[in-house]
Image 1 (tube, rainbow, N blue to C red):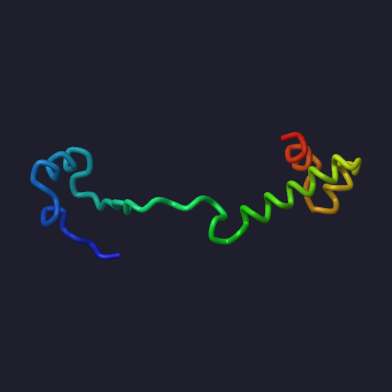
Image 2: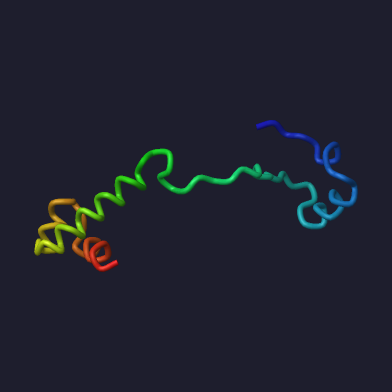
Length: 85
């Protein structure tokens, strides 16, 4: 990351306003890019959506919460949250 002097970039009025809040501090100004949602690039979002749908379907077909929890390595409380959502 390249550091630049704010007085070289910002108008004087804006620089004086910023100095009221953070004089002598190093500030990070994030880019304007929109962030991607969690799991968008890795496919995790799709994986968990499909897994949860499968758990719901199996629960509707009379499989017990304890059996589903053991098979998917989840706690029974987590399976309940998935099933009853």
